[in-house]
Length: 93
Image (cartoon, rainbow, N blue to C red; front, side, top):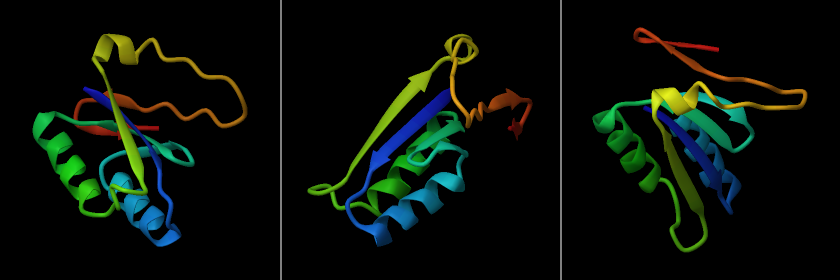
């Protein structure tokens, strides 16, 4: 499944740590948005890693799950377009 992660982190130090966790699971598509192709177990590991880095009173992370069919239908406009594709076991930008 394609997982889209968007976050709003109040503290710059936590922000860098959250981005680093996300980078280890997927690709940045905007400043605070990542796309990650993850099965259930890897997704749980991502959520656990992020939960350990945030202050739940001040920070927010949202997760969207798209099945492969809907993931193919995403569109974008503007200068920075980065879409990821699932090809076998690889992540292609």
